[in-house]
Length: 289
Image (cartoon, rainbow, N blue to C red; front, side, top):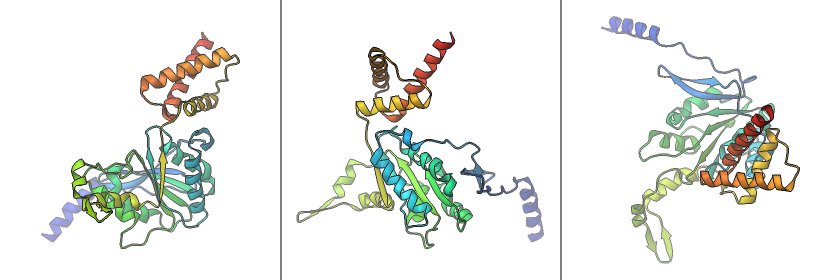
């Protein structure tokens, strides 16, 4: 029976894809964690999305906080895992990518991990632990439903595993929810009042405990009208569109940018980028015709 089982295993292993080698981190700046045939591997990103941090407007305080933490990290000094939360389209993911563009030459590397693959975090950390490069594990748009397995894995990776944290790995996560989990009105019934103090129930404490394991919280807020127009001007300049010479033309462009945002129901850096592409493409067609 043992011989037959070994023969079957040999045939199965022959059908599985061969293990993928780890990226050459001396030349690779970013990678994604992927799975094929049940095996996880780091897939190099040939052309990482390079974003200039100076092009991100109206988030100066947030840029300073994340940049300072990242500088501490690449210098080998104590630094925190970062949770970037707040309004959609305000530059949370772009700011993380901007850190890679700014500090890749100094050894910073980025590993993107989907929420479904967070259970593999210990394997990912084991692959890069001990290298001289500094790795940011990037989890974008991170939210959990009750009972998801990645929730516990992330808690252990942040703080709480029997193994000590890797000195060259941090986790940067973005989310529209501050506590990462859905909150229900019924959970407020668990709140206890002891004298003048309010003590949250166990369910609420459990949900708060995950976000509290991030040492640095960075909040993003909806753009004011002037911030949105400043973002539009910045992205248009990035696309090579010159500022209109006349005041009437500038007012017309600003009015159309505001109408574009009104149709989308949001003023944000993402909407400003979308309008800039819309405007730049239309102006380019006019010049060609």
